Image (cartoon, rainbow, N blue to C red):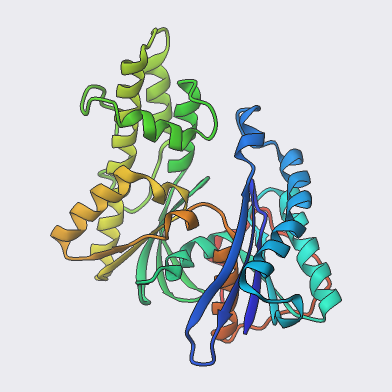
Length: 342
């Protein structure tokens, strides 16, 4: 079974081909990705209209590249998976319309997918993947959630952010400091030169007794600290270090609490923030002491990509989900992961 995956929910256009064997083992045959970071950097953030237009320009060339790289043809594709939501409405429409149109032309079925399910399952692309069940810390863009993942389509929400997500806290702090776009990676790079403990920020809900998060207060604390100050490069690095330390402290504490609460031995960290070096180092150190195994996607699969969509589509079909007949187009810009079933 050969599944074509298409991702276009925000500012990355991704196309990939994933093959699932009759024995249940799968393989990523190839993938192609284009990031719009350079285009949006001029505006300090994603411009939805520009994102949609760029997806239109990139999808066909990326599809041709992915097919050529793995030596396959469109005639060999068995199903087309694509991101139905959540995301930017215009961007989602590009991927959905292209996928449904191509499927209609080829006479193939489609598998509309939840974007965050792709992130949740992305560590399964690794050479040493986790096994079901596991706890997942999902830190992607505007989402910070802890899930119990019992299988494909079997997700239980254990905790989530009540306001700003971790990624938003990174990006908004970076904007306050004038670090440009994308803010999270820029803040992390500057934090490497900061002095630990030089600036200490609050850890919202660290001792709340539940698995929920809140990062809006951290953003306010940073705003209060920098207002009226002339910060040199070292001072800005110290602020970045303090912010990163606060965010990572909360994420690590809550994730390990979830593992302990569920009695599981595996923790998956997925989403763009999962690429943060400090988060990985701190989690790995704590995991050794707690005798649990932590899994991450490969760095190239932490941000949005077509490979995770092709994988999720193949896994759903292998688990017995029904593909739909090609044709009708429906997107879901807002789509709670808790509504997802097999």
